Image (cartoon, rainbow, N blue to C red; front, side, top):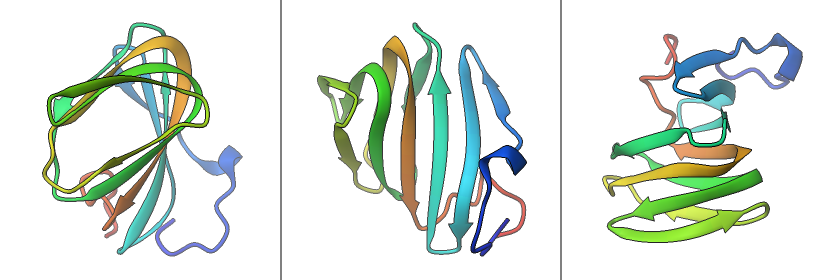
Length: 113
C-alpha cells in the first residue's frame, strides 16, 4: 500500500498487538504515515520513543497520556504532538480509537519502505 493514492479500510488487515490493542496501517509513503490504533478499556501503550515526529488525534474514547514525564487526560477531538525521540505512552480509560500521523513513516510497521 506504499504510495497508494486510495486506501480502503475494508482492504486493511488489522494487526493484533496484544493486550487489547489493534493496529491498522493506513495510507503511507516514505515521508508520512497514518496509523489507526483501537484500544480496549485498560489497554496500555507502553512508554517508548522513536526517531519520528508524531501527532495523535483522539477519534473516540478517553486516554491518560504521558509525554516526556507529563500526564494529561485526553478525549475525542483532542490532539497531541510528540517530537522525535520523546518518551511517551498511554493508558486507555475508556475504549477508543487513536489516529497517529508519523513523519517520516515508521519503517518498523511495514516491509516495503
